[in-house]
Every structure is written in C-alpha cells, then in structure tokens.
Image (cartoon, rainbow, N blue to C red; front, top):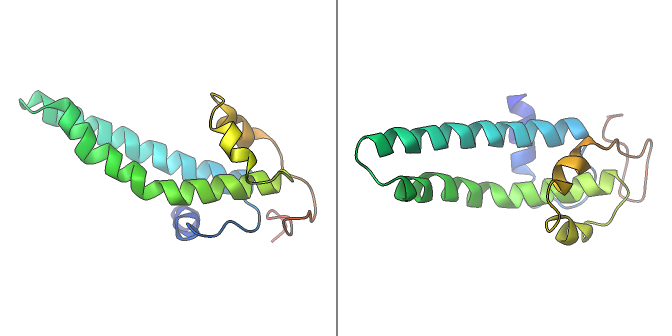
Length: 121
C-alpha cells in the first residue's frame, strides 16, 4: 500500500492516463490518516498552552499544499478512468462530496480515449 501511495505521489505532474478506484482510495486514505495525526498533534500542542490556530496553520496547511498537486493530478486521472475530461474537476470541486462519489464509481472497462484500463495492468 505504501508503494502505491508513493507511486501516486510521484505522479504529481502526470495528467495523462487513468487511475483506478484502488489508487484513488489508497492515496486519499493515507492523506486522511496523516491529517488526523496532524490534528491530534496540534491539539496536544494546544493543551500545552499553545495556540491551536497557529498549530493548524504550521502543520496542516503546509501538508495540504504539498499534497495538492498530486491530488489534483489523481482526480484528473480518476475522471479519465470514468471517460470524462479533467476539466470537469473544476465543477466537481464546487459540489460537496462529488470527489468521494467519483471515487466510488467503477471506471470504464477496457481501453477508452484516455488510455488502457488501469486494472488490467
């Protein structure tokens, strides 16, 4: 699983091809787990008379900014697996839970206009 996460992380500038649901959920799950740990650390620091807002800014925002390019590229490749243009992502970011729903829908079987089926390789 860690290898899959790191492979997705390394594809931060790869907007071509497709991403299967497994790749999507492993990446999102790892990011969620890291965010939970960072939030926990920020609350522990807050209990030691530190400012919670400052802790969140110093811990969570840099993590999110570092992950953002890989996450956007993953979302575009996930849309490609659904045979949709990556530009649709602009609209999906405006709809609550749309990205999670996109991660639940099975991709097109076989090759589509964005490349071969990622589950067949």
